[in-house]
Length: 477
Image 1 (tube, rainbow, N blue to C red):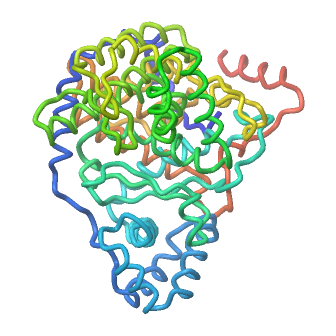
Image 2 (spheres, helix red, strand yellow; image 1 turned 30 degrees about the vertical axis):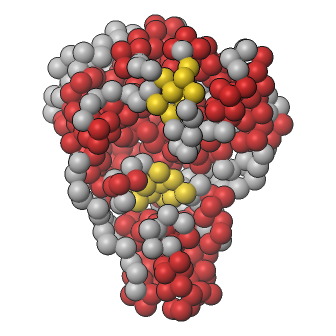
């Protein structure tokens, strides 16, 4: 799988997964609501051409060699080609910063915020989650038999800003307009300190949108698979088109859950409720899906999350799926999708068909492998999350190293599920999660002096597996 970190033996207490307890979920939703209403917009956009070029040059050496080659150098060349007049023209043509100017400024922010040390600890923690998720999809072990993506084999850079846009990403097929070979993922600045459940949305952005943008043809194949599965399920052509037209957001939800397990599904439900509480005054999933919204209605995404979790390869998948579906049921009103009313049972059936199509379709763009084969969630992942929950919720400073291999995705899921359970101290869990992720980032070889493109592949290959197993046995004596 992905690049691992380690936990000291003293920190390892839980040997089996803990029970599913969501009694503190309303407090997590309130945490998201407060974060959503936070007006912090982060650093001002660098709209002066000459000042930007000077600041970029000062930030060059703060980036590791990998990102200097893949992001900094091509971006600097793109600015030089534009010149001051071209730069000003791009800004003038996109005053709302949702197209070319937004992309140009966000790439600049990703470089500058790393180079100038903006919110250094949370930024490094954020970067570690994004790097881990992307590296997991590209690792040789998980992607065995599947060729490298057509676009971008380097994890996206991260930035803080644009709070009104929530979490979002510029996938690599967008950043390539500037010659940049990595995407950019953004979070509102408030999420550096509150709104813990927003970190669960990173699976959607990075393991979802950024991965979909990396393999040519994958979106189209999944769209066709979803449409055909729904037509075969007799839910009607209109509903089939509704889902298929929203394949980017839909598949991103599924991919996030394949990479982060039930924690990603829980994170989506809590995050959507928090946003609704902030902007609509009620902490409920939306049952309406306007025709001009590229996202499926919230309740459909809740049912999709539950159905996807049921397809994961761990023993409690069915139990988690039942709980997530029940949480969604609590919020269901009259479901209206693109102007047409849909019954709750039809919505549930359609979500199950969509999840199965996305998880199990053997895509030509993936050498006839399925997404569920490349990434999935297993019993060992659940055990690691249980161990990390003990670490994150325990007394004292979290250890800088752990005995059993884990990934940043495990740490985020552990924090989310711990926060949702009885007595979950959300603020403390958020702070300790950032500390653990920052420690992982400091040991990430891609951010060191070596030119390491895929840290998940940076491990020895043993000629004789029994020797390695015997060494482990002796080490335990």
